[in-house]
Structures are given as C-alpha cells and as structure tokens.
Length: 372
Image 1 (cartoon, rainbow, N blue to C red):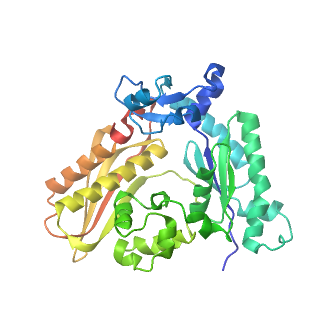
Image 2: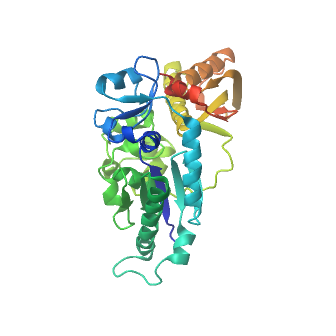
Image 3: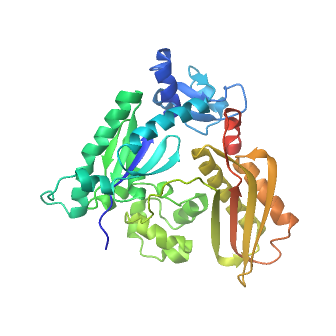
C-alpha cells in the first residue's frame, strides 16, 4: 500500500464579487451581484456574501435576484479581469511546490504530499495514525497559503485538507468564507454522515431521486444501508459505497488542456423507453453544462453515444457555429441526433452525451450559462 496522500482543495470566496469589491472600495459591505441586470434575461454568475443573505446564488435568474435583493448592485462580468487575477493567484499556489489540478478560475486541487515530506514534522503525533499525522502537518502550510493570498491579492480563500479529493472538496465548502477545515481519516465517516447525498461526487438528479426513493437522503443513510447499491444504481453503486466511507483514489492531475466533457449512463435493464432516455439525457446535459460553466468554457460540438444489447456501439455528432453552453441547447442537439439517426431503433444498454471543440468563454457569452 502506498503512502498516505495530503490533498488541498482551494476555493476562492465569492471570487468574481470579491474582486469587484476589492477594486471598488464603495462596494465593500454591499450586496454585489455579478451577472445580467435584473431587467434583462440572464443569470447570476456570482454573489457576494452580503447578497447571499437574501437568498441570491449563482445560476439564479437575474430577475429573481432583483426581487430577492432590490438593493443589490448588479455588475456585468469581466472575465478578462477575473482570469488575470486567477493567474496571479495560481502563481502563488505554484510556489508551494504542489501538484496542481486547476478546476476553474477560482478553484483547484493541490497534491501536497511531497511538500509535506519536505517540510513536515519528522515524528508522528501522539495518538494519531501516520496518515493523520501527515494531515496535521499540512495545516501550517494551508494557513500560510491563505495568508499570502490575503496579503498579496487582498482576497480570501477557503481550503479543505484531507487524504483525497472527495473529502478535500467537501472540507473547503464546510466553513466559508476564509475557512480552513481538516478532515482526518479517523473522523471522516462521522463527518460525512449528515451531508446530503446530492453533495457527493457523481450524484446527479436521477441518482439522487433513486436514492431518495430507497430512503437514502444523507451519506449516513448510505453508510447504514444493508441493501445492494449495485442493484439500485448499477456500477456507480460500488463507487458510491466507497465515497460514503470517505474513500476516493482519483489522482490530482495537471491540466494539459481539457479536450472534451462527457457523461454516460448504463441502464440496469436495456430500455427503448424514450421518456426514460430523455430524462437521462437532460440530467447529462445539465451536468455537462455545469462543468462547462465551472471551467469557463464553451463548446461547438455535441456528440451522442448509444450501446445496444449486443454491445454494438454508435456515436454521432453535430457541430455548430454558435457557442454551446446551456443545458437546454445541449439536450436539444442530442435529441435531434437521436431522432435524425434513428438511434433508438432498439433497446439501449448505454446512453452517453459529450461536448468538444472547447474554447474559453467571453464576457458576452456569460449570460448563456445554464440556458436562462
């Protein structure tokens, strides 16, 4: 068995709004909403913590945000500015010596294992396992990184520390803003128990509904479940059982440029029910749209993949001149391909959806996010 890992998840606090508040002192302490104006069709891209107190959150229709927070200061997104700021922050992060997997302009995983080996304490902490000792040794490194970002960029960040990506991400969300949460191996299962299943990596709307129908609403419910998760969720049931115990072996990988984003679903029983297939496609389109949004990307190509009972697999794609971001657009193009190519001519074992021909999103394309 290999050595235990030390993983950080760094998440800038209300990044777009915080940059705007930093750059304009008159905005400090005020509810700042980055996105389309409330009198125009569009969505909220980010909300300051002052605005969040009114129920404003990202992806909310701007008109709704305006009703919830009439005193909100609406600002158009300035992606060039946010990307420039992100580059400065990631330069600071890179100087830690970590292996970095940047997920978006304001979020990254850091594998700090080698850094802890070089700088950590040399003896185990009393009463702690070797794995937890390494995690405790990483706390000063996380505090120093937070302090440097605050000092040099005048922005706050929240960091989760754990032995894997799943737990580190949950930790960074736990105590925002300016939070620092350590999840030890000893306490990880207890930490997970009250968390809603929808917060676990890989759980989409369809999976969440299946779990709810089985009475599984929290991770603790999954931990205590004595039924067969594979029968309930297919192959993902095995992965979910591991996640519920706080186990996740996904590596932190340097980003060499995302080429495509996709999702697949294997049916427990082969089906030709177009309503069921459409529901899965809609969930996949939403997941892909959200991933595009997190990475500030647009797509120009949509691809569908089907596998039949005899394992024959077909893929078809369509490329458009217009930017593809919204879940509704991704779904409509996928449905068009299925119908045009008559791909549901027999029961399906698997349905897949993906996008490619990816580009960075411009300011003008922000309002297309999530199709609102």
